[in-house]
Picture 1: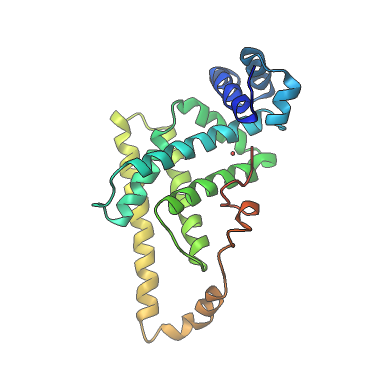
Picture 2: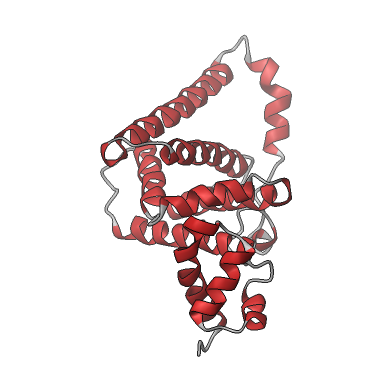
Length: 234
């Protein structure tokens, strides 16, 4: 019998993944996972109070953890920073062992009642990437970096789900184009701030942005992007 909550979660998730391609992240899958893992349903509910929804989020967190582990093991020192970001997103996608499980997850989190969970999961992925790459932002950039990367990651995953190219080369090309778009936008913002004629127009927006602060370490667990936000996280 599993001896800890983490062990219960791991065994239930492993058992669920066999059923997800057929039944999705559903109550049917949750019950089948309990049966196959030999875990009492009441005990399983303690680990995953919302059943299959929390299982799907645990699947997402498992992928995030695998990505972070790979980032720590790879030598990225020779890469430009934009290429480090691209590598991190690619590592996150390559951490997925079952594309159908992700496809079923996008269907689940497209439902209005779970949309916030899905958005939070993507935000946490972006936060994990920036944190692993050593981001030290303490102002509005903390939020804008994660919001922008969330968009890049989310759109790339959707593209990847429909990509049948050899070794997903079309997906990696799509990813590079999205990152180039972001870099172009950042350069445009910089040129506006450097333009003496346009600088006055940015005075108020820049002042407002300067007043925004990243959440303190003590509070990040209660905010999107916190390392343990959503204890039950593709």
